[in-house]
Length: 134
Image (cartoon, rainbow, N blue to C red; front, side, top):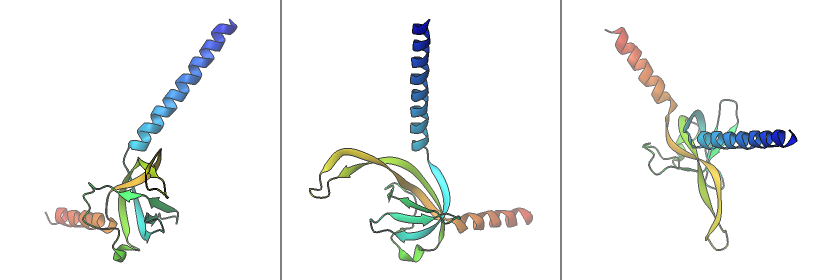
């Protein structure tokens, strides 16, 4: 009886860990979307944003395949509100002295697309006006 209880407990622990791991991996690869105000680059050339509550959110880089026509290196964008699409990705760590890749990776936020938040409002307003004129 003790053996059966021990085996069931072990199976429950393994199943719980497996489910948690799968859920974490699925969540981290899904694309997310936030409306944020751009604050410019930090000292590491990462993109700094703040949300509506003033919480700073830093993105490591922008995906090369991003369809955005804007460049976050343009200082005239500082202070503007954007809709930012991003996902968590693994990036390789490099040795600062040698510049060679290490065998370690870290998870970072990568921007997959971003656009002016006012663009959405303008499109919605023009659609409302067009439907009212019909």
